[in-house]
Image (cartoon, rainbow, N blue to C red; front, side):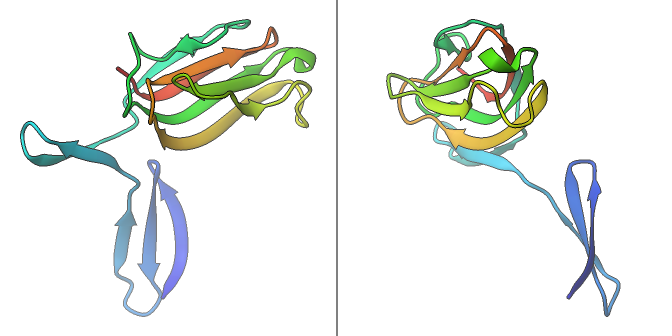
Length: 138
């Protein structure tokens, strides 16, 4: 039975209330490396910045199916034009935050943990927002 959970360098430690034994719980991402026939484990990887007023900015050099989008860090400077959306390749826009978000001006961290099924991820920003996209991009 767990008696406490506390953050440790982006991980959690679970301590058994009876024995006192500790278990470290770590979130990992991974994938199969078919060429080398092995499982690869990796962290969120790299980041890419997206300036305000961008339309369908590709994350990575070209973007590709299988690209991993871990999270978006959105900085809203003008709430009225803060909208941010993403697309999976040529798919429909997926709204992330609207214009005039409830929290107004500030920084929003949006965990996603999603893999592209099409041709990589694209980000569109309004005039009032900038984005740092974190993940693994082609």
